[in-house]
Image (cartoon, rainbow, N blue to C red; front, top):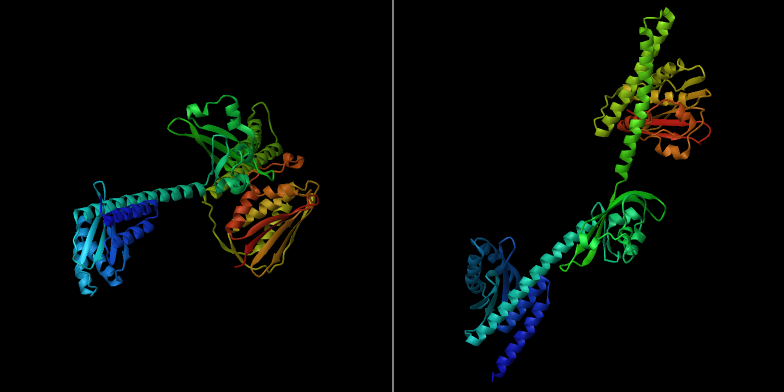
Length: 515
């Protein structure tokens, strides 16, 4: 029968072992290990040193040890070649440092922490007294050290898992794509912020609901929803293949977002479906790019065909050998060819400028510009091209000087005056006016046409946009003039805008910073 003190000792060992192994936070584990070791060995102070993941040997916890001692130990440990040598240096240094600082401890007990063949670190306990350890004491101490090593190893594994979980949570939460994690019944378990923004539904409101009720997709263009796939016998669980869906996601406010969704199944070892990962990507810009490409091909092909057909037609007519043309007819035909060639050149220049804007290669050559002279010259030129409109340059002769690319600002005025003439077919007055503020000069072009609807005003300065009305369909244009005008003015640091009640004319204005 064991003596009472041994029974108590083993009961104590069992108690502290349970306490140590129940902790998972590394600092709490080390603190408990150190306090228990000091208590078991009847010590007065102690430290725990561990081999860090990067290979360094560092003191992680201290109890009853003065900071000056810890400060001197740090460079001693760092000078060691490896962790084993660092552990030996530390053990040999503790007694001499303790004596030098007058602590009076003359015995240091070292308990190495081993996990299999891996050296994790050691516990060092300062003791007063010369009592040795019996074989039973050593067995109990070794059992404690083994339990402490297991606890340290578990805490480190928990720390690594927790860190990996935080990293994956951050990746999931801050992903640019919408991500939802579903269970086998399509109930949402996770719902990241990108998907919340895409759907207009807060994560707290989405969790627990069926995916199809939260992410409502209409106007499907490809693939099938989860419910449709399963209703048609799609073997999600058996195949492991992702399911694809493309369509329009409808937000609670009725707004639509073009999306593509990939559903990927996740199985356990027994091939049972655990989760479905839904990756939702906003493809609105890609859809718009496709639509714009189609629009571009349609508009440009139409705009190119007309001048090319006229040039070819008139050239072919003049070349006919079976006809004799008088000088007036030849002159008129050549004038048409020249005008249509100029029109073709302008269209090509506009397309090149649009490409430069998109690629960031749009360049300006600013000089000092007298806006009043520029406005009057451009207005005079356009007045000679129309007899149904009265063009008025209502600008003073003392407008402030601006630093601008004169050719580009002329291009903007050309666009605005050309549009004013084209979109007021009944004629009327077209007035170019100005205003001056402490920071900018504003030029406005007003017409008496049919006006621009509020809906069209939102898209007026986008590429290839042309209002869908009878007047626009009769009028030539590729929808690039206002887009380029906006790019030019904004490149100067100014702004451009339109005002119209939708019925009685329109007023286009742009500003340029004062020199």
